[in-house]
Image (cartoon, rainbow, N blue to C red; front, side, top):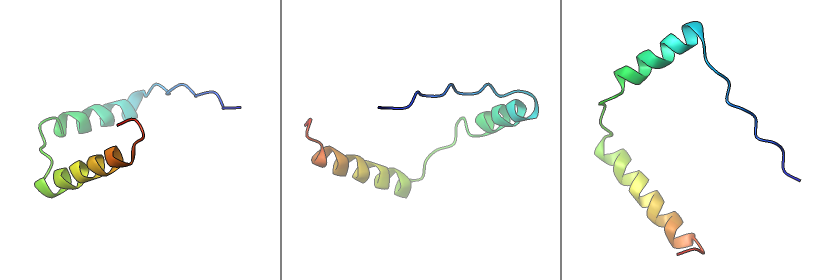
Length: 53
């Protein structure tokens, strides 16, 4: 039987401030072409292995 999924904890204080700072810093950051290509290849690989295609 499967285990229950635990709730995601709420972040507070310094952790919340740090999280939102990092979120803001990376908001408009672009993914480099090599990483994007690797992700696309992985997606295609898993699509080809899927029985739901």
